[in-house]
Amino acid sequence: MRHALALTVAAGVATLATIGWLGYRLLEQTRLPAADLPPSLISSAPLSPEQGQATVEAIMALTLPDLGGRLQALAQWRGKVLVVNYWASWCAPCVEEMPAFSRLQRQYAAQGVQFVGIGLDEVEKMRIFVKATPVAYPLLVGDAADSQTPGLQVKGLPYTLVIGRDGRLASSRLGRLNEATLEPILQRLSTASAETPSSAPRR
Image (cartoon, rainbow, N blue to C red; front, side, top):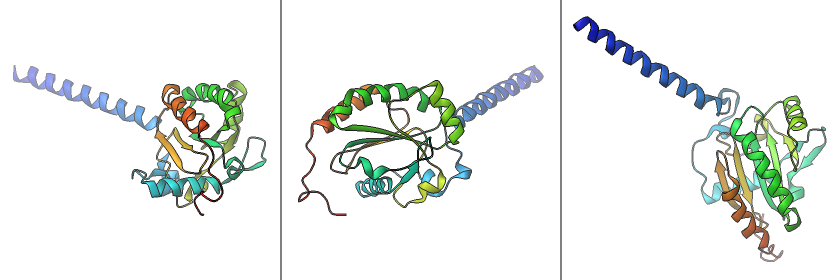
């Protein structure tokens, strides 16, 4: 009797261990490879208003290659409603949200909305991805070194930031961002007037 009970307990422990291991593996598949990234990329601290503004300035200071190798300064989109999405081709939630981002880009382009995808991925994998799944906005190639600018705090993928015309961080989201959540933000920001030079924050 005791032997049977011991076997039952052992089987239960093994089952729980297996479930825990599978859960860990699934979670790890959605994370960035932290061992290869600087602390600024894997910080778990929430963004304060000051950190949010520092992040905006760090992003605006970036100049990254597009898929054709041409350098693109993110500052070229200053004054627009800018949606910056960090993604990778191996990240399932990233891929799932991109069709909605493309729809919103087409819908709100005339209102001054600009999406930009920054891939933390190998450029060839990004090229293969976009051939199979075209997107309606620019894709730039990022890497860990780009994220060592003090303001950046990309904690995982996907990670999306929405920057208003005034250069302030309007919204940030770690994880998949659905269309129903993002569209009202774009509607609000796209109808807001840009600040005049006299009222814009000094940099």
